[in-house]
Amino acid sequence: MKKFTFIILVIFSQTIFSQKKMRPIEELINESDSGWPLVTELAKSAKNKVEILSVDKQKAKDALFKTQVTTRSPMGSIIFETGGILIDNGWIRILGSGSAKLNRSLPEWNLGKSFMEFGQTSPFLLVADDAIGGFFILNGGGLGNDFGKIYYFAPDSLEFEPLDITYTEFLIFCFNNDLDEFYNDFRWKTYKEDVAKLNCDKVFNFFPYLWTKEGKDIEKSSKKVVTIEEQYNLNLEFRKQLGF
Image (cartoon, rainbow, N blue to C red):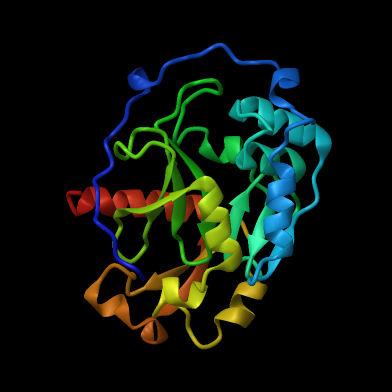
């Protein structure tokens, strides 16, 4: 994978989160100036396979309200207009308001991770993840001074790697970039067939672990399917054990 300057995540406690008054859903939906046309235009011209998951409008309103972003933003429009977006047959999963294929809304997935209660100011947001247990994170100030930029919580280093791109640029990356180049040696021979059968709320867990010297040759690693929750917690636990 591409290597970036690493940064250590600050450990947060509930006391650092500030509560803010939650805006009503009517203030978050902007039909005259929506970010959705931009997202659909990007999707139509995408080089990679893009699957926009169907949306349940009631769930979408609930997810948008809990996230407290407006539909003027691409992220807000994805939450409101989709159940999520799958890239390359589910290799990357961009979170929306949840669907049968991707049974996690962005706010529900972040609850207990980036904030303790809906309406709290969040130091970061988990906005997408991939089939090998990597997580894409929007920096809300807790990962560095580059507010609004995307980081990659990499399974091969357990580091929070700054990608130096905004959320919109992240969409362009997902839709058009050479994912084989980004993931480099972490696509095994049968990955297409394996990922096509993988539930998008689960990931592949490898042994030896990808962050070990022995785990660098993924063709020699064994793999099993685990829940995305288990993998996220495991990554954090390994960071703690290694003294990050």
